Image (cartoon, rainbow, N blue to C red; front, side, top):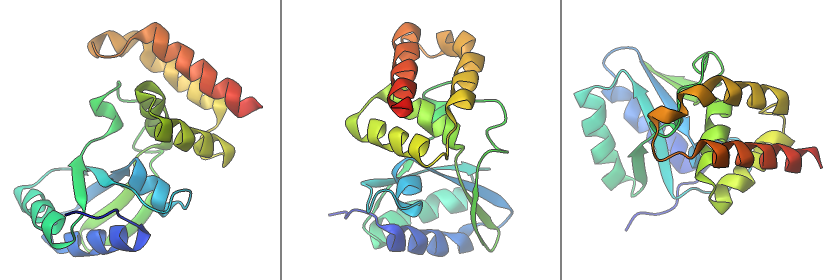
Length: 176
């Protein structure tokens, strides 16, 4: 049975994964892993991530580490659910360099918008924390949403008016 991942287990996972990176690779942490490492959640159910570029060696290592560390690992990023935000890579905060593996938090604005769109209770709590700690600035979040809004038709699971309403609601709550 897999266990929840705390900061120590996530760091161990990153350290143990690094030797499988045979060339410079970026690993972007997403969702709960970001929340845990930034300290507003003690654990996460799974470690969501994006590899750039993907390689067979790293994908095999993910599978092995999932078993040996008894943690859930998912290949998932905001761009799987909403349009890619312009400049996301430049806004992705650096975490650590382990050999050829450079680890970043996936762009907080992309994460916040994907969480708002999904709308789960934990997602809303995470977005509030991103706004409270100023990891995400309200005006910039609204601007970035406006920049991807014309592309939402490419994501049939997304209802653009509901998404816009959810962004407005999140920003109203942050202002109070």
